[in-house]
Image 1 (cartoon, rainbow, N blue to C red):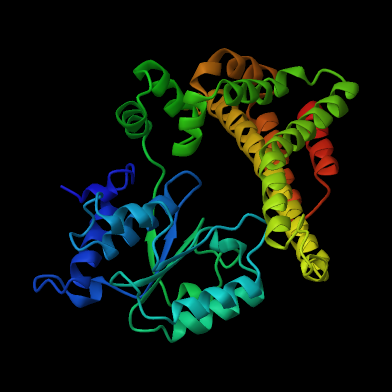
Image 2 (tube, rainbow, N blue to C red):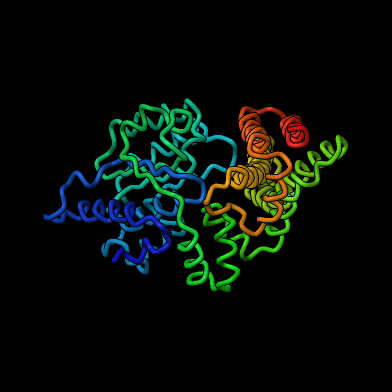
Length: 393
């Protein structure tokens, strides 16, 4: 029976066992080798596997006197990101800068204030710039005695995490959770109807967060339906460009909706903190030189909006790649579960239209589009090129 704090780490029994042994070693249990615990961990796994969830649960268990009870102040504050000895780096923009990482490394050198460890949790460590990676490497090479580094990244590939940092971490590989495990947690924890939970888990591609959103958000279900209707709607050249613009518009619209309220509130708070609206003698002087601070906030907000837009677009491309994967499976007669079981009829029609070879060419185009956007090709150009291949094969 695992500690309660690990209850939300779905479908990862082997990983939880390793983490609980590490927690036991950190408490000095005589029957657990001290080597079970180390100062740096790298959580890897596909999107939705729960890398950051597992890392936070581990951090809570390390700080908790009862090894992860889930109720104490240490567990609650770590899981909510407010613990005094936890520094969580959650990149909102496209990268994690060297300036940000140097500040984190400085904090990591301090002794714990209230807990047993000073913990640095870096979500999306694959977004570290080269300079940020070098700054982190120095701290990981010579860690303070009471500091633990928890990094999360898709894989150990050098494109995700530098070889030098990876070599100094213990790698914990997470796997895609089974649909049954995802459905169970949607029913048990989120109170979702079992039929809706089963459907959302089946079409989520093993992504827990995606399954929860599909189960609870009608807009998310509508967006998925629009994306997966694309292969059947590309019947002319005009449709190619129209659908490309619609897809980019969807991504921009979602990013704008997410950013608008938050950006306005942040800007207002910053201006108030800088003395905006003040009437005293020092108000004018205090307001001088604040333009640079406001400009920096606006730059970060723009970067965050760009990342949101790309994330929405990438989610759409993942849905499309799942559709063409299903077409290939059906064309070959493979007896494997479909990624989109609710679209079995549409998949069968597509398989009869262009077969396995045609589906493979289209899948390659979708993956090439993802890579092009990652390399900063203008999204509209990358999507138009993809749509052309989806249309012509």
